[in-house]
Figure 1 (tube, chains in turn brown, yellow):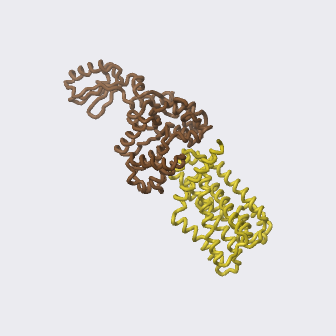
Figure 2 (cartoon, each protein chain N blue to C red):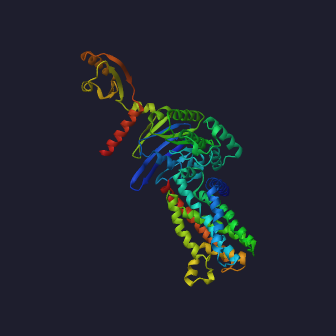
Figure 3 (cartoon, rainbow over the protein chains, first blue to last red):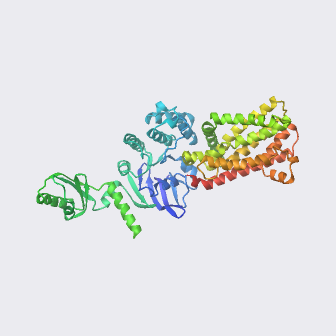
Amino acid sequence: MSENAVEVNSLTKNYGELRAVDHISFEVKMGETFGFLGPNGAGKTTTIRMLTGVIKPDEGTASLMGYDIIRETLKAKETFGIVPETSNAYIDLSAWNNLMLMGELYGVPKKEREERATELLRRFDLYDRKDEKVKGFSKGMKQRLIICMALIHDPPLLFLDEPTTALDVQSARRIRNMLGEFNKKGTTIFLTTHNIEEANLLCDRIAIINHGRLAAIDRPQHLRSRIGGLNSVEVSFTKPADLEALVEVPYVREVRKLGDKVRLYTSSPSEVITHIVEYARETDSRIVTLQTLAPTLEDIFVKLIKEQEAGYDA
Amino acid sequence: MLRKEYVTQFRRALVIAKKDIRIYYLKGPVIIFGVLIPLFLYLAFSIGRSIPINTLVAGLMAMTLFFTSTAVSPVIAPWETTMRTLERLVSTPVSVSTIILGDVMASLLFGILISVVPLVVGVVMGATVASLPILVGGIILAALCFSSLGGLLSTPPSSMPSTIMMLASLLKFPLIFISGIFIPLEQMPGWGQTLALFSPLTYFTDLARYATQGIGYFPVYVDVAVLVLFTVIFFFAAVKLHNRNLPKRL
């Protein structure tokens, strides 16, 4: 079997005149947590829908756990569980019956699916309400149930499309913790999100997609080091800062005001700190806080998207 | 290998049928509708009229079976589109034909069970059955045929069940009038008899008349063969159109 859980080669999807996904290629290694990031409408959901056999690609190929998604669709579908973007358990069935339905559709033997359903419902804190119809569940409970439904056949690969969108902080954190646990046990996770911090916390590698094309694909740390000039110095003074003066400081590329702090983007933080100390002396002000910051994933994301859009405009 | 895959898909179609029965058929209003419709039809056609009970039973069984077998199946796909459960179903290891087969089997079972109501009422009112095997076989075959028609009626890529129901009614009601239920085929004008040939309901009405009265317009084998042909056409057309329209739904 291939060492890649997902292999995508030149996958393309058009909706009329609009090219939603444009010849993207990438691989997801076995046991990896792979983040698929992009702004709304970038092509994330279309990609996941092609990979999970919901829609057919117009061009290109892809395989899941070695099974071609076009020629061996049913085999490929047996290898993964999916948590779609919108909640879609059967609301007129109980949580238990939803899990039994999914288990039967994946051909899980009765005893095994009952044991697994019990284990999953306990783990996701839904066991006490297993016989209630899903229509009475909160958003967080529904999302937890959908994750249980995706895991009922113990798949080696799990697709999650914006799994924590619109959830409260506690539910989102709980789901992230669970994903971390499943990944530790060897499940490959393919996660689409526009929550950069979520990707940063969970993912081994990240692909950034915009306008249907891949803008970058790498480890979060490599992406940070690859994009130069995004280090920054964050400082606050006892007096209000003069942004026009600070932007003239040598080596500073950009200045942003963040509450009572000022962030100066630079490729030479040490030089900038020297000049900030001089600035404080000249303006008869004192430095209250000062720290240097590595680029955040959000900085990288915004920069890559801007660069790509500038490329389109040109 | 291929045979094993067919068996697996058939089992999964049964799972889908079980799901449909739980969610869509085992509802108070659906069951009450199924039971009351034939009773009301009896009242409407028997009070103040002198139609022989055996003639009445054949026509009412045909109407009941036709209405019940095509009542719920056309709205399952649009309903599941709205509830976003169709997407889940499509991402599981089942083919489109398996999903349709599951929907058809649930509808088939519902149609068969409800068609017992007019038969029992008819027997209580004095109707006789000339050939029980032909009647039972005819009911099963016709329920399969009409359920497949229900699958075909659900193919327009609308997520509004009401739109599908309206479109289905536009087809279903004219079929009732041209299928020899109200006027026996032999009493129809030439153009009426020609139109009747294109309705699957014609052949079940004829079979039911044969099974209850011992007389039919067509030979039994013709009725059976044409019902089989309609079933195959409806089912495969439904699969083809669902495959084509599915991306528009999701």
